[in-house]
Image 1 (cartoon, rainbow, N blue to C red):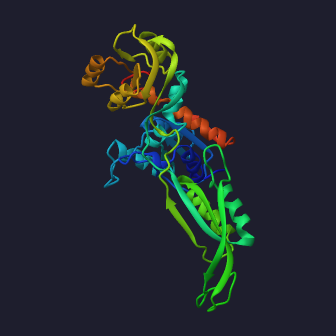
Image 2: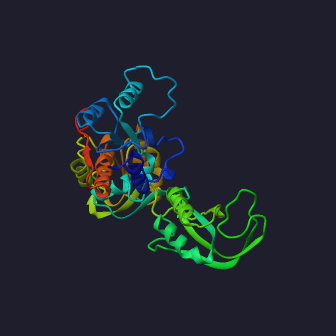
Image 3: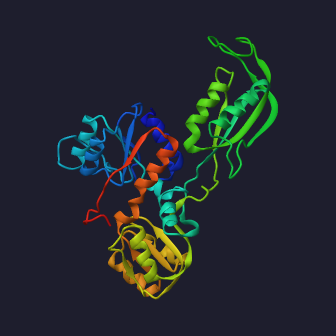
Length: 366
């Protein structure tokens, strides 16, 4: 049985917390990281109904898209709302894990997934992330142990550059150190300056993999106190960012609207614009993406799809000549539950993973 921590690590390898917006609250919100998990329920929201399903399924873990806790909780007193749900989780011994804007911006996250469901091809992020995921790891190793350390850190997740792995650089040099009182040096004598032929080993490490890489480094390195450096890099995060933009087979806004209604089970999806407008390039942001209308227009989209559109945004869309579909917050983000469940089933084939049955807060399932 995997632990909550192990499940969290697998999901966050796909949707790194570093991709979350600064105002967000993602990660393990309730529970024990070391708790063992046999059953998981995935959902869009941690509502009372979803929690009841998790309780009925005897699930130890609930994985959701929308965090149950956003602001600080000052007291855990029954309130019939958020606090009551948190208390039920705690009393029942259940953990709650949230992947929100990090799932939105992940290279193969929610927006990528919804774009694929709708048949968009050649997609890219609508708004590339400003997060920088890479660190350079530099470590100094005795020559005879350099290969063992290299293999250990690369196996733990270091050394990936694009489609290449095991990417490292090594340079020979001379290391010096003097073991102090009470030390147990692997090489050298207490109080005597040692000169040791060493290798300077360099590689890149994604921030989400750092803890595991450092554990592997310390386990493989022969020194009592290995010397290593971590340097932040400015490399962009490949294919990560909010929303997606891509192409569809030539269609019209009205036809694509019906396609959205059918594919996302969104019968109330509404179109702003001329139904006969030709559509070839589509941009989308799941959930509350009304503020990205300008980004969609600037990127050359014929049509912009999101989950919430305010009146003045609709007026602006009409005036600037871009079609907009308001498909509803729930229908555009409900696929998160299936996406998360799929990742878990792939990583943990013996885990009992269930998707909660949920309904739109405005009624119905669309």
